[in-house]
Amino acid sequence: MDRKVKGARYVEGEIRVGGDKSISHRALMLSGMAEGESVVRGLSGAQDVLSTLASLQRLGVATERHGRTVRIVGKGLSGLEIPDGVDPIVLDCGNSGTTARLLTGMLAGAGVRARLVGDRSLSSRPMKRVIDPLCRFGARIEHRGGCLPLTIQGGKLGAIRYTVPVPSAQVKTSLILASMFVEGESVIDEKILTRDHTERLLTAMCAQFSREPLGTGQRITIEGNKALSPLDIEVPGDISSAVFFIVLALIVPGSRIVVRNVGLNPTRARILTVFERMGGELNTTIETGDPEPSGTVFARSSTLSGTEVSGREIPLIIDEIPALACAALFAEGETVVRDARELRVKESDRIEAVCDMVRRFGGEAEAREDGFTVKGGASIGNALVESRGDHRIAMAASVLACAASGTSTIRNAECVSVSCPEFFDLIESIVR
Image 1 (cartoon, rainbow, N blue to C red):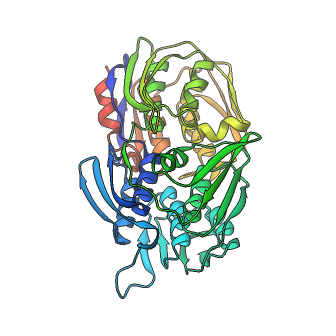
Image 2: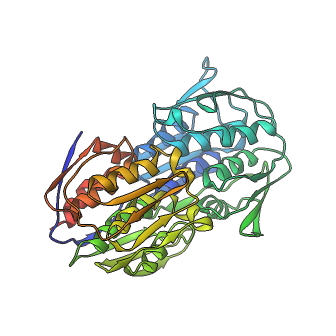
Image 3: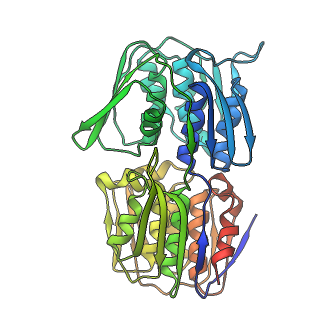
């Protein structure tokens, strides 16, 4: 589906985005592993999260969903099952890399025989980063060149002691989930800190684990085969979706918006610090803090300057880099992104996709193997942009279309439903 997006005179209003996708995935899976009934309110309606919910239902986890509230009757650490006569069970992860990587860890730990499949995009994305460590500690997993489809053949895992070689919250969480099922103490080290939603949820569920600083990262120690208490949580709004509306307010003159009930976890909201460094006029208020900080963000049109992001900052903003590119195009000077090769293996090659998008709107961008440079200050016009089936590219292109003159076309814009199905309704509610 193509989407026509007109340029805006200004942007104004108050919005709430859907529930945080990353927290929703983890809350569902951990609730399925808990003892007793969990309640997750404000669940993301994203297609990715629905893939996780459907997979848990296929594994015998009883759920009852009313709108954005889901009740989950956990199976405990020994109750995950497959239907009689189905071996292995086939679980469709759709387009969701989070579903695939986290399920691989959970099912390997539980010893459930399962075959994970996904759509064409997901089937080209790397899975060996979770397969290799799990097999090293006893799992038996068949795969196609390190990609989906993969089959978990069972195998009894021993305690895991592993240093995650690349900063990845998904890899860390996959190994944590596997560790929950095994006897003894597992230790997972990460050299560079990544988002900590899993650790916060485990604390809320009285898990037997600890975390301590380790250089620029942390060490997580898990005592396995210990029951998890049920979860009761209100999922805050997704900062990775909200950031596109925040950028829109920053770059369109005369604009201001308010985003309510959005997640402000410091390992997720670092992009707001980057925008402030660029000169963005933001005001953030934290209103709740347990287990996830959330609150309100006020944003208004600003005079921006280019910046550089690299190193330890990258894992904390990796999903928001397409939005950063939008701000960069309206900033004085150059914005440089380094150490972000991970962008090459997202739903699209986001380095190439971002640079192509910027150029189509009339800007200048140079791609490198591990990032890109955007030159700001260009006068942009309307454009025809192919989303490449990538929800974040579709959203970024829509933001630039609102900031441009004339009417732009975003091809295959329906992919926004992967993370933010309400995206275009919210755009229309604030564009004047």
